[in-house]
Length: 259
Image (tube, rainbow, N blue to C red; front, top):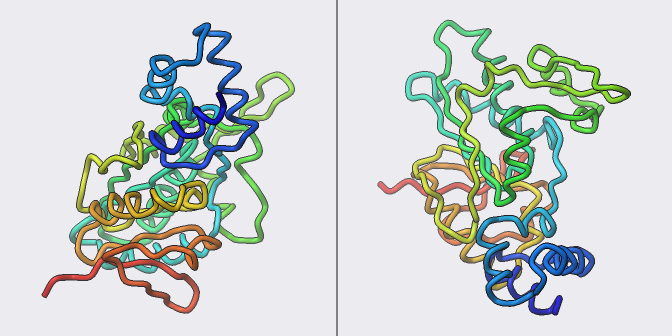
């Protein structure tokens, strides 16, 4: 029966699920629904509930700092127009908040601030709820040797919850971020992004679904828009319709401008 669930994971989510995770989902369906059949499987996949068992949600603030340096270098070009950014497969939201912190820090040093909007989505409703709350444990703040780690300090309030230490994101950061549930196997609900961050999730998608995945991402970029993937993923990616670029420090993909 886990083979059936594995096929469902590929059909609905586009991913190759781990066998142990499939077994946990199977046990959950037996316990809560009493059966594993087409109806119960369709229900948990369409609701996104299955994603809580089958997706990897590893995330932390300012992960892969070279990407944030890269984005900061582009911000002066958006002073007049503003910038629209999408964080795809955002997990618990650290990436989106990191970008907002970066832009807010940049704006403090200039006369005319860059206006911005960030759409951030994931297929797992549980992690999106965490993102909306903006309440995190200590693991999301990691010493990685970069200065970006310290950029979180003005925007994170340290709290004590019994023996646990937690950090609450300043509500001010949420004003320009929209968190929502979305399946990457479907077209993105909004278009015209200047940047799409899709990092460290590509490896979980099956070969036959990667073309569909990239079609949906590239279709949401504006002309000249940039797709940024995880450092270890870029070499194995070939998004149709996007040009492979690098600036010496960061490899990325860019949608050609039509002349």
